[in-house]
Length: 89
Image (cartoon, rainbow, N blue to C red; front, top):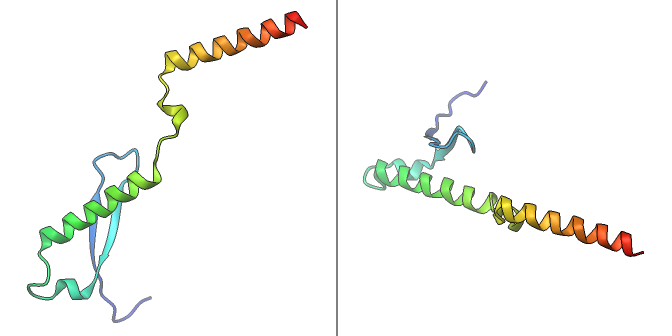
């Protein structure tokens, strides 16, 4: 049990539940003083941090950028090449 500690948090719900449900940010006490920062600025910065994190950690690999039909065609061509090599040997 924690006594004597209170924190202000912001919970940002994700519009895309495939990635995460929500992000929880603990707001610094200095930011809550009068006139320091508005509530809209705090929420905007929290959303920017969440967006930046998702962009950096969920980079797509180059294989996933290839369209499915092209990937299938490359696979078929590679299989045919292997079959041809084994027939000539």
